[in-house]
Image 1: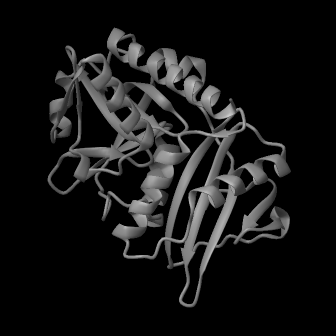
Image 2: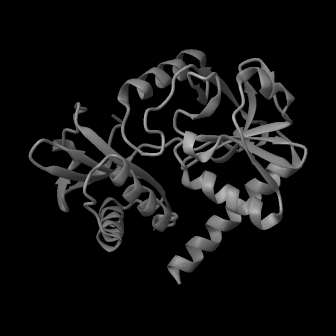
Image 3: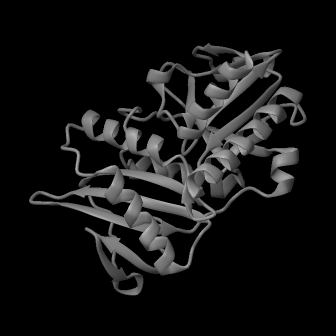
Length: 273
């Protein structure tokens, strides 16, 4: 489990000092969301809440959250910790007799300007998520991905399922570009990341073709460019997937990156008004 950032956490709405908080990994079902805080605003909060509710339904659990309570708790915790930029974790841990709601800030590592300009290295991990549409903790998969990322000095690994198709990253979605078309995995094969969904919305608004299809690792060399999407990376160019290189200066990709940054700025401005 990630370390805690900040002096305080909220457990079932009650403030607790993070130094005295033990967040142990267990075999219990854990449903979670990670939301990026920008200028004190939980970014795209409504979309995260919708996905959280969907995860509850898929996991067969009763929804134990309301929009107003969760958003207020996030903002309260941010003020208490004097944090206005970073990632906040919301976890629902289903014990045998009760469910704990835990909200805390996690250390984040955002890409550098160099990463956005020149792209990052990505590998392939031949594993797949069970129930990919629900954001439920799969610690063994996360641990294996983290080991591979660390040992090979990668930014991310892309998951390759039993049918030999690339689906998504271990903590991101992935998109490829060919000519003027965006190519990505079918929605029912991935966790629908908020940044990924916003990127698809931008494509529709700009008249950019979207192709949902399966593709194997040996087919991606025919694509022009590639990028991952996620809470921390936003839209981040991929320089290479193993030994396959991509154009990190692709004009369409950089237009999408710019439009997503504009979307963030517009959302924050509206929420602060």
